[in-house]
Amino acid sequence: MKAFKIIRHQLNHEVVILDAKTTIKEIFTEFLINFFYGFLGNITTVFIMSKNAYLMGLGFYLYYSFLSIVINRDKYETKLGKYLILPVSAMLGALAGCLIAFKYIKL
Image (cartoon, rainbow, N blue to C red; front, side, top):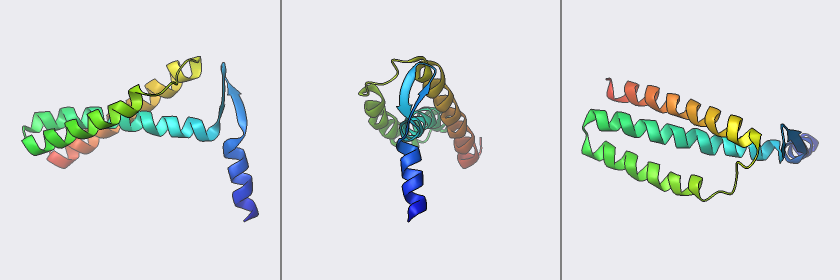
């Protein structure tokens, strides 16, 4: 029980990275959001290449549903968000989306 309190405290502890004042929990959350944004964007392009209408429809639905989450955030006013969190996590998600989709449809 004490270990969870320590972990929770560390996750919510405020840190300064570059010019951003944030928490480890917030960085992790934003990383995951951007990862899935890149993942869904690129899995959709592979579904388009497969010419399967059901997969394309599912890909578009998931991508645009998630895009509303990404657009409606008031984040990335700092160098940390603009130059590290968004591009790196979206790039990793895009790469994972392409690789998994290629493996799934065997292109």
